[in-house]
Image (cartoon, rainbow, N blue to C red; front, side):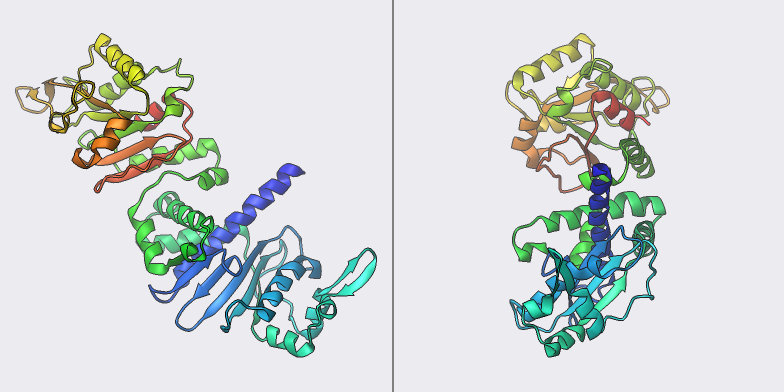
Length: 409
């Protein structure tokens, strides 16, 4: 029962997030905005409208007065005691299992009073009488109030995906895994900001951010999908965007949680060897292939041990001499290569992989060449971005073997 309640709570949050996304996409002008968790769940501000929406995903099969009493009381209280003297429309958007949009009950004065009537310790009470609210005030509130039955959860989520498909002229897969995921992250990030001004987002800002960042995938996306589906979607996305092609420069940051995990099935040196064989294997890789760049979030002692292991495996690396005096010029330098007689394959290379610490990357970030794609594998967030290239924040891999599977589809 507790699990069911928790699932219902999570689903309720998603329903609100999806509604927020749709409302943003519906805004008529780029300068129009919504505020997440404002007066109510969603506040809408346009040149012609100020509305506030409460969004409820209820497990009740049909409409009952008690299910909408609390949200209507909250709206009524705000109407009677506004912080700002502006004309606001109040909307209750609530889903019931067996109710369909368009069949909402008429909320008139009689119905409103019935909704405001409740029992407390077997005593019947009337909220409007308890608070001294007049019929004139109730009617004035009703003139600015609207009740709408919400669509079913999966239907609304499909509506969101369809809107992204049309807006960005993309496939359903891209709409789901890229645009929807980004939109979800933006709404969630806004909802937890303390200041009301920080929870506001314009239509132009929303469209711009979801269209230029690829963050795979945020925590709420994982709660919606299973771990297995999450990893499958990442693999599909990386394949669809062709970001793993050998000719593209790929930088991979491995977080502490992965380096400290049980990697008995695939130690770090074996991971390196496998990735080199996949992307930069001598006598197999084409001449336009690029060595991988690996960044490790570990201390200096561990980093030196990793490099010793690479030497033991005869894997030549470029680290810009970071233990002596880091040189970005040397680190950025392309490998010197010998090619086959037909100038197609790489026969020899001055190094096979690049490797540095997270600390060195942070200290010299502006001077290090931007990769085509930057992958962060960690449960932690890192404030590291390059001005160019694609960015992939891939959380919830539990060990290096899972990282390897994603990078070698």
